[in-house]
Length: 135
Picture 1 (cartoon, one colour):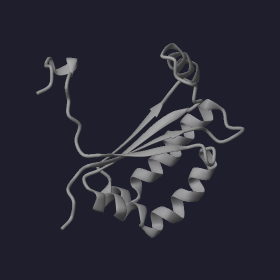
Picture 2 (picture 1 turned 120 degrees about the vertical axis):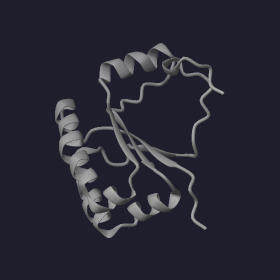
Picture 3 (picture 1 turned 60 degrees about the vertical axis):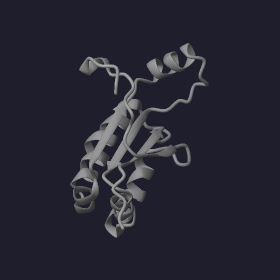
């Protein structure tokens, strides 16, 4: 039986060496991201794709303010799927693999990405935007 539990893959990333922040943001959004979401497998299996383009100085200031070790990440990507089966289908698709691995090498610093998986729906305890305190 297929799992219908939502899956999100969160990726903290750094730009490739020698690439300016502006070049990184433009390529990641306008080339990598645009081409990714046009792929047939992405169109079929992806629920949502988000990119967070973060100003390095503000990230450093915020991490320092909260006593976090500065990470130097340039952005965060979030890839959402309706199920684990959909995530597996995308990440085993031969066209996706043939394109994404070489393209990521153009924009992301190798071996510096931090990736983790979030499984299931969130339990909202507070959300000011909808005027309630959760459940």
